Image (cartoon, rainbow over all chains, first blue to last red; front, side, top):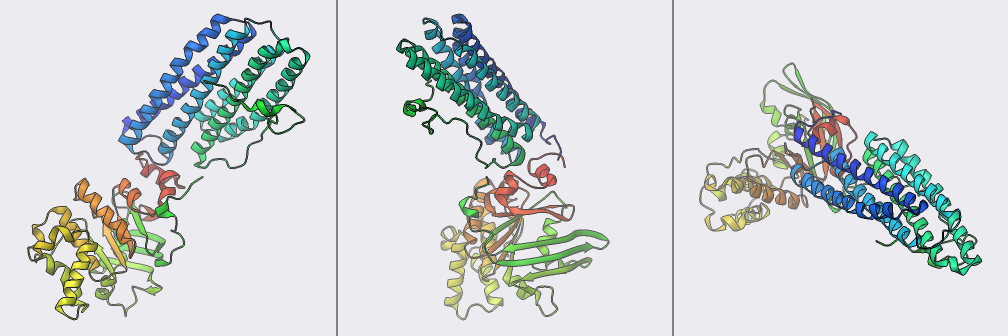
Length: 248
Length: 265
């Protein structure tokens, strides 16, 4: 197939909207890392920066939606062009959601710095955030390179994030059982872990969009699920409340 | 992933109306259609798309032997209508064209009254036994052509006095007056404004209830809007033939993709 449209303005529009997705992706990656870093270093200023930065991410999403609507109205995209527009819209929604989770992490960091730290968990949370950020980076690379193999790899890696979440879940439970004074902090930390786990799900959804973009088909194999806290009582005997998603 | 829209839901289970096998068309030394196999379903709108000169109109004209009128044109291969070879020596092309009607790019009403435009075909094919019969056919055809309300008070005014869009619907009404089984349309909307185009497209969708419609169009959007199956022709070859939704979201052949997305091809 040829790369260029007869109408070069069409190419410019498509490139523009994809460039914006990449910019948005970059901001979201940074937000994840900064949120985790602010938590580990008890850095309120950085946390505040992450919270403020979410506005730029939201604005980009809005801009992408407007451009996508214009593209559909003015250019009637078909085939690969249509799939670009559809996936751009979905990916921007996923990125916006991930940005919200990062913002929520930063918000909780603001509360957590007022309390005494829970040993070891901040570093685990940062590793988890780092893994999610790497998955996001790979998913976005796969998008730009139209690489369905890399996208599938990202999908498979989500179970690692889920396992990290399971481990943290048990850890927080132990801390809370040991000393009820830990409960407030652990609840916040648990929400942060859950936010990370949800981010992983959104990254997985981005990777699925890449596969749809390349092949025209959505992967129908149920992806490996590693989060057992809401189904397996051996992982979490009191798991009923553990299903809450992050707010924002 | 691909979920058929409702209009396509039952396509693919319908009877085959026209079956073309290994069709070749030559204009003198020019090989215009190469080895085309296509199965056209009954009660379905099938769109032929492709760049100018790709052979889509030529192939359409094979389906009711309109190419017979061109001396240097030679058709080989087999085209079956309901299992019977339309190029068989015993087939009368005039009878065939009553069964396989045609609508052209430019509206071409006869220089007669609106009534006579419609009544002409049924008269020569002896479809009406009485004046009342003929009146019925005229009214029914004009109604099916979605133009009855606009012309019922001036049936004896000349057909050429209508607007372009009305003339085209009159021609469609004329084509269906002989109760054809297949309706061939060669760019029926290219001379019409968007409103008249919309009316003709709506009409095509209604005709699908009773006829098999094959439409050649340069407008990809029109093919996407009105058809359930789409065939893409390129340089005399049938490159891809499939469900319209699939062709427009996820074509199999890179040539189809280049063409429908407006890339240089």
